[in-house]
Length: 303
Image (tube, rainbow, N blue to C red):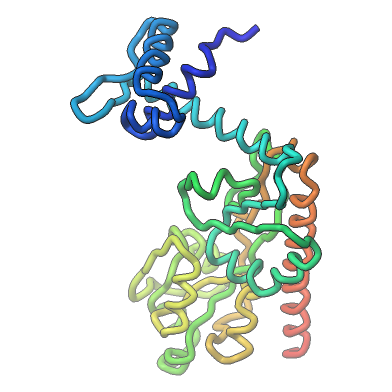
């Protein structure tokens, strides 16, 4: 048997900590402020320590209260997510996906209507936020750019990039050689390591770049390349349209595969109990395979 305080006390505490006041918690839980105060006293008596410091205009968490609040939020979010997915009262299916804007734009958005047509009534929520927004709920699926699988969760590799250098039309002919172009402004995703690895495996003797610009969003890098701000390493399969229309040009055909990959991550029990999660994974894998096939076909045409 678990040694835990009462659920009412934990709910009152979590609501007060999240709202910053007993009044906010009382309004949320539809009880009087006295009831919230009573539950907080029960919790502090149970723990033998204070979880709040009372201020004139609200409450402030103690160090111990902060630890408890973090744990409560995680537990309540997990519980709410499970109830949401198993409840027969849920009239509409909802799939919440947390994903970066570049992957969302290049893989999901172009043909997502086909997936939705196969799942009438499904609400697909795509979030690019790093923080969880209460109104949107906890994500069912996270598409994460990371090293390896996630321990303790269902994880499947979606895409390992083949990075090639590309540039915009406006700077393509400004340099006397490919080497000079590759030593112009280099645009980096998160760090300079990918460019260092590409150069090391290319066999080219290249000097330092004119400038190094580091971004944490590949979508912004894409726009910077189009505007002629420099040369970037991008997966060729994800910019085939830009290459085909002349918005971008391939500077070199040499490619480099980083260790980081795009991973599909969700709870093991959710993957088993909610079939649409597996359907979404299968659809994503087909979309990635389609883009690889298109890339390989384009390469054969050039040969």
